[in-house]
Amino acid sequence: MGRGGARLGAGRPRKPAAQHELHGTVPERPNPLEPRYAVEAPEKPAYIAANPVASAEWDRVLPLLLEQRVMTPAFRGALENYTLAYADVVAGEGLKAQSGFCPFVVEVTVDGNGVERQKLKAHPVIKLVNDARRELRAWAGVLGLLPTTVGKVAAAPPVAPEDEEDQILRRLERPMAGVVAFKGR
Image 1: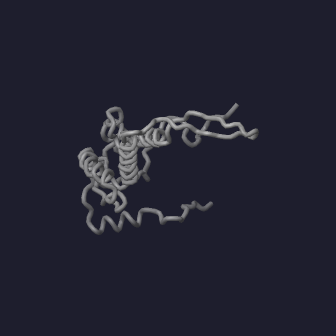
Image 2: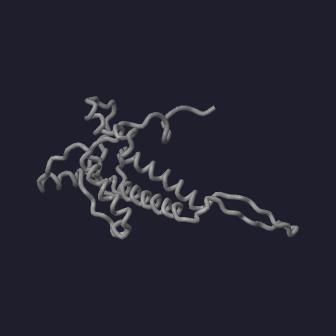
Image 3: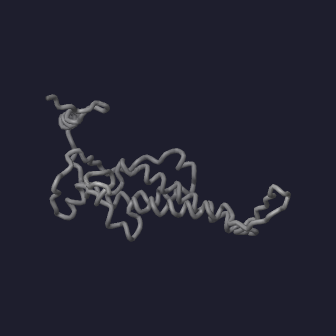
């Protein structure tokens, strides 16, 4: 029988500080190292701008995310993946809508005795579209774009503008990357 204790992924995940602020609660053990990001509109990557469908979805969704105060630098990758999954769904549905598209294919194999066997399978585009839809739904949930997840995504707290001295002090307080803090005996 396994023993209890702290293990990765065990139990309920902690609420971010922004969610505690929204709900007016105080965490039992606040995380002093939790990052706080400013809300900002990221620049559209070139590979998304080159895809007209993904680019149009980026332009449609970004203002919504900024209005909800969800779009921070931490969510840029989620937005990129969401728009690419959306473009994959649109492309796959376009292939399925072409005249003459058959949702099934016949796979012909020959066994060791030379006997030909036929097997009816779903068209590969069907699987690609279903996978893209699943991925699209997952990324939409991360960004709070689904009716069931819109209340679960924490908005970024407003960040007061810092002067140059505050920025320098904040950088000095952070441990250097790659250096492990060590307490001596």
